[in-house]
Image (cartoon, rainbow, N blue to C red; front, top):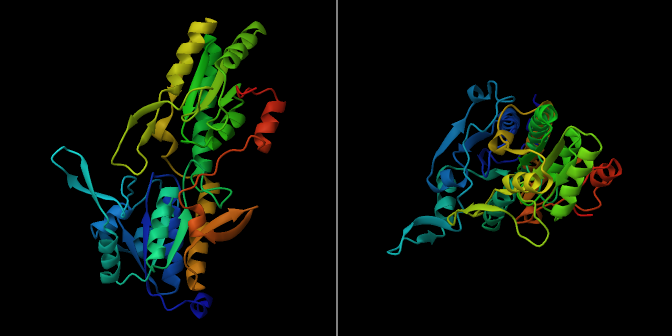
Length: 372
C-alpha cells in the first residue's frame, strides 16, 4: 500500500498555476506537486497563464504524460502572466482611452467551483502571493510556493530560480572579464533584481567584480571613478562593474526605462549600465562598454541545486495539503524546510542588508560598493 494514502485528505482535485515572471525550476515544482498528487489519486488541474487563465477559464488536466523531461525543462508548461490582478483586471478603455478595471474575483471563484477544484497551489513571487492571499480570504484553501530569480520574497531565505540566475550572470561576467582585459576597458554588466541586489551581490562576488552596485546602497559616482583610476594606476588591465538594474546614484532615484500603467508593477527599470559606462569614460578616460543581461537570466535549464530546491518546495506544498493546512507558503529558513503564513510574504520584498555577511566579506577583499 502507498504510505501516503494513509494521510491523504478528502481533497481530490487541486489547481496549480505559475504566475509572474518565468524562471528556471517552475516545471520542477509542477512535477513535484503532480507526482505527489498522483500517488494519492488526486487530480491536478493546470491553470494556464497564471491568474489570467483562471479569469478566462482556461484549465487543463495535468497527466503522467506531461511529466516526461519536466525536471530539467526551463520555463513553465502552463505559461505565465505578470500583468493580471483578479481584484483589478482591465476589461476595456473609456472614451479617453483610459483603462477600465473590474474586480473579477467572483468569476475566478465560479470557475474554480465549476472545475471542482478544492485547493489551489500558486507558484510565484510577491505579487502572486498577494493575489493568493485574496483567494485564501475568500475561503479557498491555498498553498504558495515562492518563486523569483530576484530572491526577494519575505519569509524564505532562498527562492528557486535564483541560483540558476546567479550562475548565468556569473558566467557572463567571467566572459566579459576576458575581453575587458584584452582591451584594457572598464566593463559594466547590468543584472536583474528590481529593488533587491541579491543577484548582483552573489554574481559580483562569484566573478570577482571590482565594483558591485546594489539598490540598497546608493553609490557615489566619484568613488566609482576613483576605483577605476586607482586600478589603472596600479597597472590593472581592466575594471569589472556588476550593477543591479535598480541601483541608485546618491541623491537620485532609480533609472526608469518606461512605465506600463496597466501592469500591477508598472515600473520598468533600465538605463543604469549605459549611464555608468558613459560617465566612467568621460571622467577617467578609460574606454568603457556596457552589457545588459536582461532575460537571459530567466531562461535555460535549472541548475541541479534549483531542481532540488523546487522539488523540496513542491513536495512540501502537497504535504501541507495532506495535513489539512491552508493559507501557508512553503519556505526555507536557516537551511530547514518550513512554512509561513501566506500573508507574511504578500506585497513585501526581502532586501539585502548593509551588514550582510557577503557584503562584509567582499569589502574585506577590497570590493567597492560605492557607498563608502
